[in-house]
Image 1 (cartoon, rainbow, N blue to C red):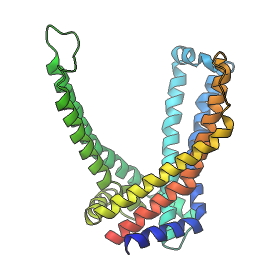
Image 2 (tube, rainbow, N blue to C red):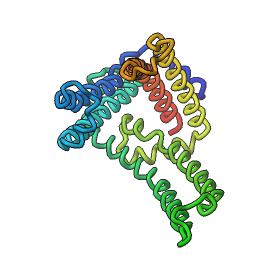
Image 3 (tube, rainbow, N blue to C red):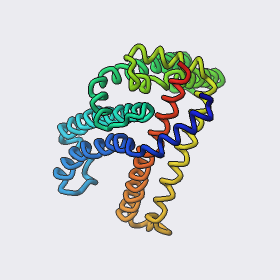
Image 4 (cartoon, helix red, strand yellow):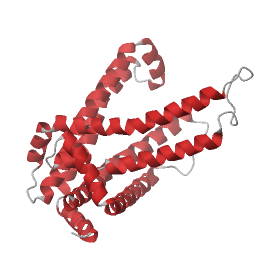
Length: 286
């Protein structure tokens, strides 16, 4: 298929199979539900006065343990539903969509998915660690007995900027070459094989991949704009600068509406379209 046909088919499949968005949305919902537990604990300990939350975290370390424990659990549950959503898109392409079957597959291959994701981030960590090492060396060399802190000239700013530019380019290229990993696992490949598939597909169809990623970025930007527009009715014409509690309430409402709108748009528009575009291109380029 040509790139235009891939894009056209992706939009058609997305429009006729909107229910795959429920799996992606379940991922966001699971984070909200699980993270309500530590906030409920904080609410109870502070008797509803969340301004005392900092003191509670300082005096009751177990609340911190509960918070990070729930965060860890919610992440695993959310990733499961995200992977299920990707698999549902694969079944959509194969004209055999079943949310139940997608979840069963995700449960069976979940460890492979996690392994592939860990491999991806380990690879991405390499240039990051190299950059941090060089940055540390530049900073360390800049110190002298006459200085208690480094100055811009001491840090050799042009070299640091050049190093950051090189790091950014390498990191971006790696991100592009690793972009197909979760989709390859959802299409039946193992953790190691998905890495090979991602590199192979990107190498074979580098320009197509770049164009698709730009299109995905454009869709993401539009979703963000729509979410911001939906928050406008909840923003008053002016803020009472003297009333801090009132401003906090307004900000909370606006943030809640934005996050809800963005979660829905991400789940039912961006994630399915991104998945369909990348899987179709992956299959076409193998």
